[in-house]
Length: 232
Ligand SMILES: Cc1ncc(COP(=O)(O)O)c(C=O)c1O
Image (cartoon, rainbow, N blue to C red):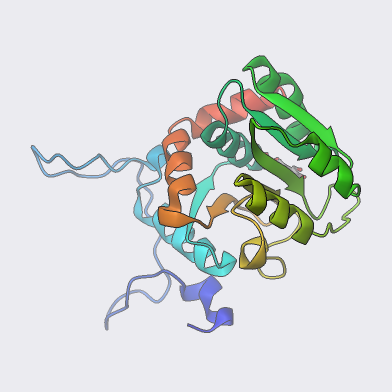
């Protein structure tokens, strides 16, 4: 499928004559199940309903990612990503040029969960290397940066993350996958916010392991803005 077609038709089931050209919106929270089935129930917050699955497939195609998870807010996406990646005792290395809500999530919520966070000047490569620890599990960077719209060079961080075997998380709230695709060359996880009307996280990696972990956290999606309400 050619790139300009993806935003309109990407990820949609093959259409047969008589099908609607535009995917209809299913206005239902829950879905009919076969009595006695062992299949998981389809439920909007679990993300396994037709419209969400379609948007996720489409976003993954646009991002050049293996899979995508759609959430209700940018902070929900970032919080879900962090819950999926980090455990008490782990260390997060983050750029200090981050959105205020993210800053509060990292320094107040994560710190309270026993996760150490170090904020570094994103323009000082030596600081990134110096602050890496045995327990570092993820590197977080925002680009373009809010509110300056500074675009950071991700190559160095991508190499550092790769060499150290940790996840690189890129918050690209200000750039849609039309003009910025960190997955295409750099990141393994990208939470992005709502400037374009969506909040999502997409991932590249073996078996979409990280997306599956995020999927499990999605169960709490509607609770997470509560967590980040502190952060707003
Ligand atoms: C860079 C960045 N990340 C995350 C967020 C949070 O997005 P949301 O308001 O959808 O939770 C924002 C919101 O402005 C943002 O600018």
